[in-house]
Image 1 (tube, rainbow, N blue to C red):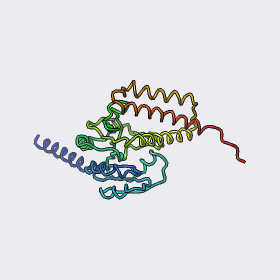
Image 2 (cartoon, rainbow, N blue to C red):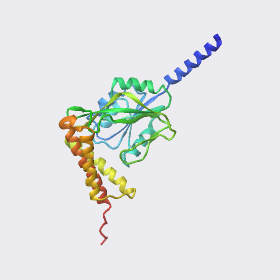
Image 3 (cartoon, rainbow, N blue to C red):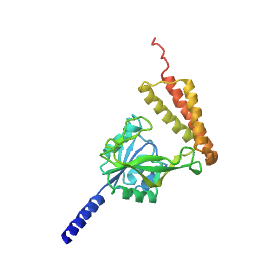
Length: 274
């Protein structure tokens, strides 16, 4: 009996040792994020390595990343968010990947749960983002709860190659779980940033749909824009987020209209060559 008990203890010790040796790679894709990157990297110092793939920044993004001990690679051949995340993950060497953006911050509670999760066996972990926008945390307006898959075993999952709104693929059907603790998201600096960021996503979405042979009508663009506002401001109770909720709902509904209008424009007949 004593021998059996010692064998079991030894097995548990080996398992604990193996778990302790698991490495976490924090992975970021960035461009011109000098104003936000430092605080993000400071919240990631618990990771075994930080990998930053820069898309050709014109500010101090690369220098700041190196100051915080990140391994930095520059690749300005932009083919969309999905491809860029794939490239960034390929640079990582850890057993686990925490895919994170420069405008996000890991809270102490979330850090503790991440460290526990990577020792609990392979799984896809969803993290809840809490967005700070124009002076307040947004707890409605379709911005919270905002569960996104960001923590996963490096060799068993990865993002697809979609240009925008890329998705994490789970080819091995790993269990999917949720982590406690919010991921703080400093989503928009000002209204100009909100509009320009929305326009970028709208353009990338329209390009991807046009390349896939999709089409739409202007009536469809109008309908999607209106339904977006109704969903965000009324159904998702954006009115409870005050003036910020109204601004977000208006700009996002406009962005929704623009992306469908962009797709409509891209599928119009081109003029004949002279």
